[in-house]
Amino acid sequence: MRQILIVTAVAALFAAPAMADQAAAVRQVAFNDLNLSTAAGRHELDRRIDRAARSICATNPVTDTQAVAEERARCIAATTEAARQQVTAAISAQGTQTVGL
Image 1 (tube, rainbow, N blue to C red):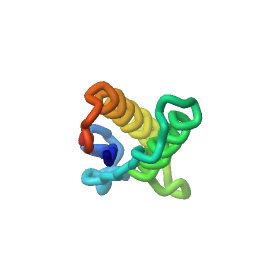
Image 2 (cartoon, rainbow, N blue to C red):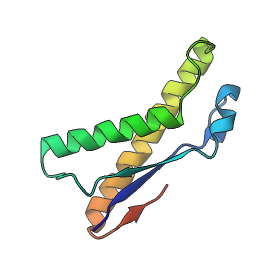
Image 3 (cartoon, rainbow, N blue to C red):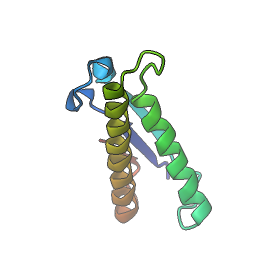
């Protein structure tokens, strides 16, 4: 069974203009190769989700203002939480092959 988590951030939910071009950002995070019943498997999935969220919410750190950095942090937190909810739903459904946001 192929399990893929679709991680999406809708930048329109965030006020920072620097993130406006990220509105359609989507990343797929596969976890069919992980054993989520182990701490190591869950840790690896968390790492993949975090990497995808940071990629989606990326801004230019050289030109970021404090406000943009704060919005980026909120974007990462919201995106990560939404992805974790998808994982929980997929595990509960046992058999869901693709999970989308």
